[in-house]
Image (cartoon, rainbow, N blue to C red; front, side, top):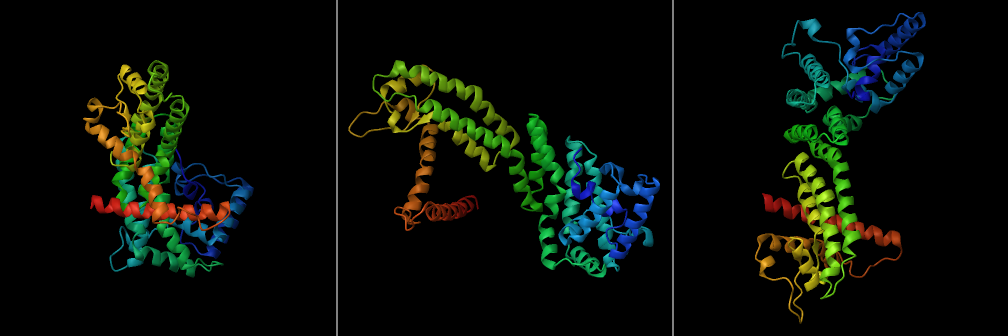
Length: 404
């Protein structure tokens, strides 16, 4: 079971103090802990939440905990992921609505207990349902201005130096849900490394269902699937570069191309198709990487008009493969006839393959990259990157308009 450092090595947990403790209370607790360590009477109690793992309470661990609390950003993070002094102990249950600070802290404690309980659950449907409930409860707490107002008040009243700036609190607020969901991402990547596609699919499905809790869900999905996506891209590139260059572009090279086409198809079936199926299984159907991967796979068996020769087309047809080759009708008769062009898939293939050319065409005309205005690799590279980023923004706008 993966437990993030924000919980396992949480400074407040190590020192056994509440998250709203003042600086003087923290130093008193550290002194008491040092004496207990020296006497050998330190033991783990329910207050330590044993589910989060063993706490190495040594002099070094105590110093490390105090060091974490001296850093404002780390102090805020550790406070976020530990329990405040329980207001229910003073009120006998959930605090009355009139006492807003107590109610906010109580809600935070309850949400944190939900995250801890989810850590102990498995990755089956029941466990992921628990995770979904916990993340939604956590999102509700960290989206509440009252909680962060209390956090700033605790920081100011605790006599900490240096005190955290409001901007640091805002930064933590932005990543609070992503930090809480870290075990989901780590477990998803572990399952992918074990080739446990069913677990990966369940975890990604749960994260997709939480997409309304912030952009972290998109980032988490990419982080989990990135190794599989990159591995698939490498395989596609290797097959295309290795075997595509071996095709002999000659009218009478059918027999000579037959072995190369056969090798390309065998590689496609043994390497490309299984990788594509894995991505289709683990990613949501509408994920951009699914469509991109389909196009990458198609490129392994497709060719430009330079392959429009009778020999190449005949060789692929003998292998029961439809040649999605661009037609070359310039002062000649194309080897691609109605047997290929009548299918809808051929039209889609030809339309999609132009996209890369559209990018460079836009950059040459709109972004003025036909002739560079700069000298030197650094300047030219910077301008190319800026132009590509601008094209991405235009493309994103067009896609959003099309799906609206």
